[in-house]
Image (cartoon, rainbow, N blue to C red; front, side):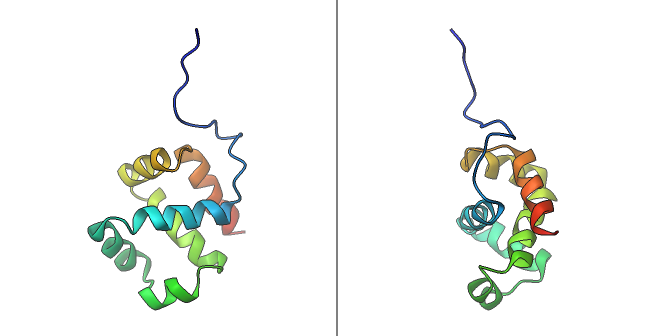
Length: 96
């Protein structure tokens, strides 16, 4: 019997980087302190988030926020059923 973790392998997550970023944003906003830190560290405003959801730079900022704080990166990856590496790769892709 093989036991596998809940994580998908980095190469098998077929969600687009934009989708991962939006899911990560939703996850980040579920915690008030984390949401405040997101706004503070990224320089984004609630209005910019609302109106910039389709903007790749806003999406990348959300994933970079997570990538720069490993505890949140790991928690987000677990909550989104992906790997930290996948989230970091998505941030890189959104920045190109």
